Image (tube, rainbow, N blue to C red; front, side, top):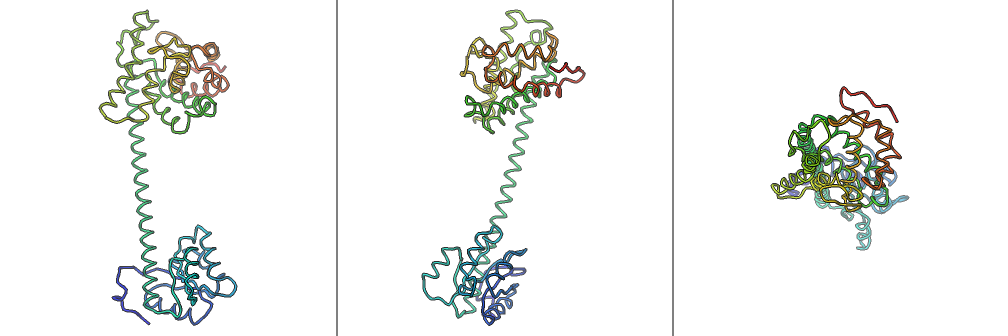
Length: 382
C-alpha cells in the first residue's frame, strides 16, 4: 500500500504529526492505520464516537481526524458537532469517511464543518493526497497564526515604546517650563493626579458622559503637565516676583496661556500632522485660566464654551496653588482651600466639578499630602 513520495509532492514535514482514525470496523482501522503509519504519521485508532472524543480532547490533540459517518451509537455527525462546540477541538480538520453515495450527505457534512470527504472503499493514493492537503493547510494556518501573533506582539511593543517616548517628551517639556519657576515643585504630578481623579469622578455625569471615555481620560491625563508650558516666555522678574503682581505685570503673566497654545500649534505645523493628545494639550494650555462666569482669560469664555479639559485643569491648578507655598504667598490650610473653592462654584469653576471635588475632598487631600514638595511639612487634615 505504500505510495511513492513523488506521487504526492510538496514539502510536508510528517515527523510528530498525529492522525486520529475513527471507524467501528476493525478491518478499516487496520487498513487505514497501516497506510498512514507507513508514511510516517503517528496514528490513534478509535472504534466509537465516544472514544474518539476522548482522544480528540487529550493533550496534545490530533492534527487531523478521519471520521466514519455511519457508526452505532454516536455517529460521525454527532461527533463532529461536539468537536466544533469545544474551543480545544473546533479547529482540528475532519475528513469524513463514508460509503454513502448521496451528494446530500456530503453537503450535510461540509455544512457542519467537515473539511473533506473520502468515500469507501478507500483508494490509498486518494487517502494520502487528501490527508496531506489537509495537514498542509492546517500547518499553513498555524504558521499564519504564529506570524500574526508575532506581528501583533511587535506592533504592541512599538506602540508601547511610542507611548513611552510621547510621555517622556511631554514631561521633558513640562520640566523645562518648571525650571523657570522655583515654586512649582511637584506641581506637575499633583495637578495631573487631580485632573485624572476629577475626570473619573465625572465620567458618569450627564453633562460629561459623552466626552469622558477611557481614551479621553488617558489623553487628558497625559496632556495635563503641559498646562503651564507658556511660562517659558514670561520674563524672570515677573515670573519669580516674591510679591503680588501689579496690573501691568499681571497682563504680561496672562500671556503665558496663549504662548503655550501657540507653541503647541507650531509644533503641529512642523509635524504636518494632528495628534490627539496635542489637541487637548492646546485646550488645557490656552483655556485653563478661563472662568465659568466668563471673567477669565485669554478669550473670556464662559460655561460650557470652556473645553472640558480646561475646566478640570482650572480647578486642579487653583487647588494646588492654594495648599502649597508660592513665591508670593504661604500655603493655605486644606479647610481654607476647600472653603475658597466652594465659594467659587458657578463663578470660577464648573459647578459639577466643584460638587464632585467637595464630595471626594479627602481623596484630593491625600494626593496633595502624598506628593507634597520635599522638605515641606504636611498640612493639618481637614
